[in-house]
Image (cartoon, rainbow, N blue to C red; front, top):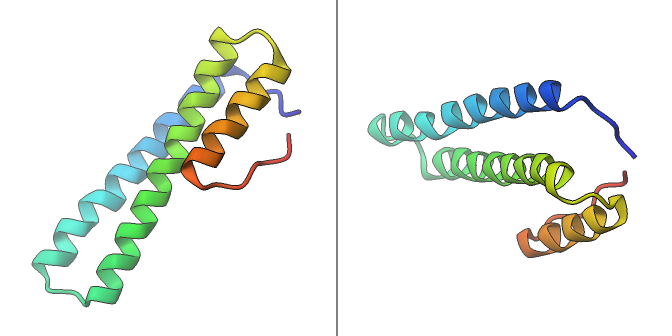
Length: 91
């Protein structure tokens, strides 16, 4: 099981959000520059993946705050990952 400090985790989530913002902002520039469909969709999929990962990190922070049982947190994490079509991560 991964044990981390909430303050450090929150900072990492904020940095992740800034990176995702950059990825999304790059899309407008790519479209304006008439970049290829393949390049633009690759960037879009990367941004989407980053946002999904950001969601998982935010949920993880919230679960640690409001769900006292590690077993229940793991179960809820698995349900969310299934809903997002993501593989479970070993903890």
